[in-house]
Length: 108
Image (cartoon, rainbow, N blue to C red):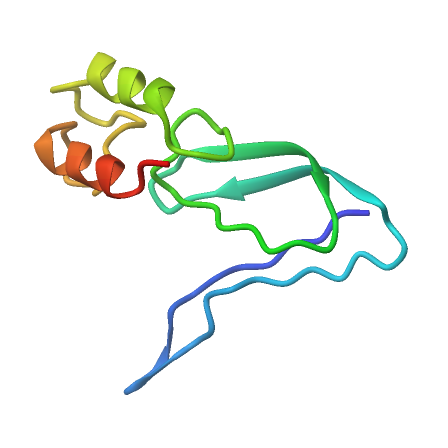
C-alpha cells in the first residue's frame, strides 16, 4: 500500500493548515518505508517503522536516520562552503554557520 500526503502551512489570508500528518494503516503491524521529500530537495527515508506511534521527523537530519547526530554534523562539515549542497538547510545557496545553527537546534 502506498499513501501520499502533502504538508502545506498556508491555507489563505490569516490562516494555516495543520502540520502534523496522520496515516491510517488498517491492520498493518509495521511500515516498510517512509519517504519524505523536503522542500530543499533532500529525500529522507526511514525503514521498518512500528505502528501506533507519534514520530517527529525533522528536515535537519541529513543522513536519513531518526535523529540529528554526529553523522549529520560530519556531513554538514564535509559540505562546508559548497553551493547547492544537501546540507544547505536554509536554502541560501551555501553551507555555512546558519546551516550549522539549524542543525544544532535540532540536535538529539
